Length: 345
Ligand code: 1CP
Image (cartoon, rainbow, N blue to C red; front, side, top):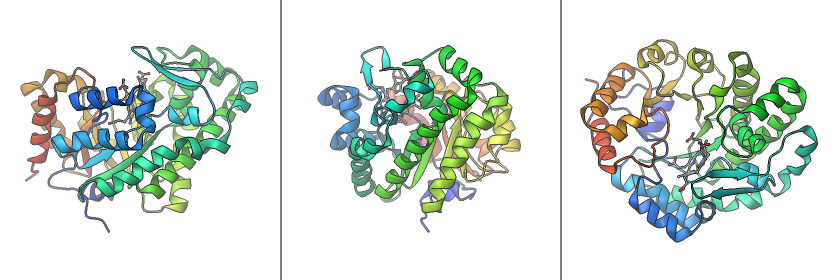
């Protein structure tokens, strides 16, 4: 069994010095990322260029020595690989040709999935060779609900009017969309694992848009299905869930079969998570990325509080959501030093 810190924490070990990595650790806050991105051209060109995607995945590891690297890609590559038109417009974010009703679903097609996503598997394969031996490689995908919000709204959204109308008024029809995305996501993650991903994280960034009564059907059940199917082929690969912003429902999410780790958002009280989540799964989180923008003692105090409160059980230090572009790279260095030199004793 591997003695990498991240894998030990996900097996339920309490470590004297918890492993750490940061969501969006590769990205626009790093000057070297901006340079590579400019070289690639478009954001999607960067995702599909295995050599450059490998390079930007490694950049934060070289600077800060995190315990894990996360594959550089995007959650919206899955709808694109299913045949939906996708573009990233500068300053505007993603734009998709929307799917709004059952009659639109046949546009989606699993046949070309692995052809389109082949370069992503190549990036994973390269990283599994080039990463330092103590660094864990994390693969990822978006959760079906979150990916569907972009597929149906056609872009990022503030209050999800179109997808909620479909999900609430036509639950059976909408379930067919969730089923297609769940299937594609499962196939995608299994191929990432076959190529060398040692852990997978499933990002449900917009779980917070749903009423609690819909969590079971649209958040927890797809996660359970994906994890079960992964474990049928790869029983030892840990799955981390990130149903962002679901509040007290984290206590239910913690008990989903097949989930080894649960990432909590920055709104959660670490003491509450220590009491209600950590008895069931390894907790990952949850510094507010805006505290890393602020830096200094406010950032370090908040990080110490999280380490003290959650470090007594199975724990991975992380943010409660991704770094924002205006983050000062020096603050990330200070934060990394704090965690790396932490000792629970
Ligand atoms: O201009 C640029 O360079 C693009 C910015 C960017 C980056 C760096 C996007 C566009 N995606 C990514 C990479 C990315 N996306 C990673 C790998 C890098 C890393 O973590 O180190 C990952 C894991 C994601 C996942 C992702 N993409 C999520 C889930 C996690 C989260 O942050 O909530 C979501 C929601 C997306 C969609 C997305 N990708 C990019 C944009 C602008 C958006 C829309 C965001 C929104 O609707 O607010």
